[in-house]
Image: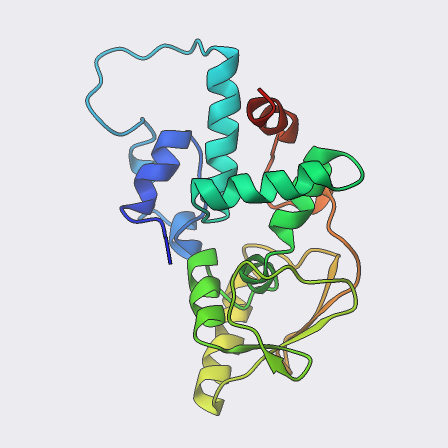
Length: 209
């Protein structure tokens, strides 16, 4: 299975913003982007001017890296969104948010999407009575997700949730029971529910060329 290798902090520096790829570490003084916000590599002069194509590319790269996806997979998601009814950009964002690993992360069960992806791959997430170990699985409205683990692991996750809650909150399209470690999808996500700012129109224009 393809995955992103290398230092996550370099990705934040390249995009010029925190992508919160390392979870709570990104909110501390240990954050590499906070220490050195310049792009990685050798630099002498920096220009603030960007071509429109560069803006489109950076928006796509930022979004793709935030959700921890490779180019081919991200492009497949766009293809699905472009074939669906409705506005392509809005549909794309909904598809990205509905990824199982993202749902686990947004429900505060994990400090980062990488950790959430690991939980899914290790078979800790059940939908209904069935185990789902595919991070890109798209959750549907009405589905109930349950995190199953031993008592020690559950206690650690609940303690982690208390810490994470101080930094971010659960989006309103999810109903989370932190005591029983369950998540219910109450509606489809909207752009306003995103944890970051995304100009999806730039991504649509880039792939539509």
